[in-house]
Image 1 (tube, helix red, strand yellow):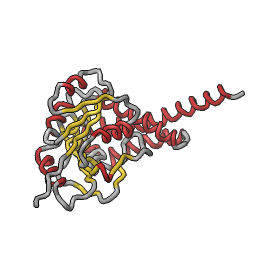
Image 2: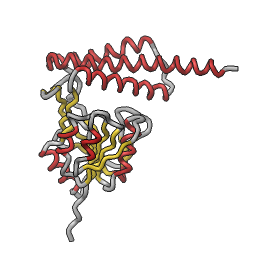
Image 3: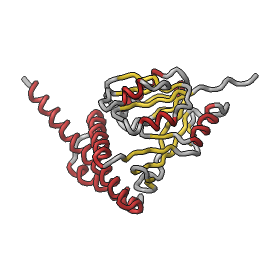
Image 4: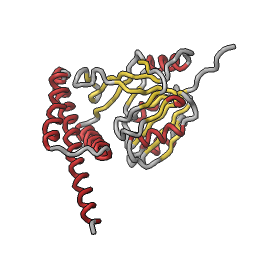
Length: 264
């Protein structure tokens, strides 16, 4: 008796992703179910998704990445989950590997994907991302997003994690202002994460951590070999770290002010 074909639910979260979302959706159309959770986009993303015959789209207010992805996970009707970002593309070879993997009776509970980072339409080969990998394919029944992180969400896996051979293509850099905005947003969310853990602001860290980030990615991780692209990416990544400490300082001041206002 043959084993039934395993079904896959592809999930995405979006906010103002026109220019990216079209090719992302095209690349995951092989999935049995495509669900998108939109954070009230204003650029036509939601309307585009509403009119796409393959997509089931819902809107949900954005609190943080972990909460939004956990909400998306609850909507999936299949156990096998393919979770991609709106600026990522699944190549044809990767599609075939995914389908082969989920139908393997000896499959692991979760799979890491290595990613190729694209600066516009040119690949970044260094700049700290040579070994970047993320969980993108997993069994819903065996995995969940930890609530300990609100950005760069982490998957908790009850079982084994393996690595797929083919790589995911990540169009991370659209233009300077767009990528800068992403890094500042991530920095502020990381600050909230640190604040909730009761990490205290430190002036020395605010100076040293961004400098180390740039030095590590540009020099030690060979970002200079990516030319102008490398220095741009490494600088903006370091700027995101600086914003984390700026925001942590603002949160501490706001908390102190609230404390004094409620004092008798």
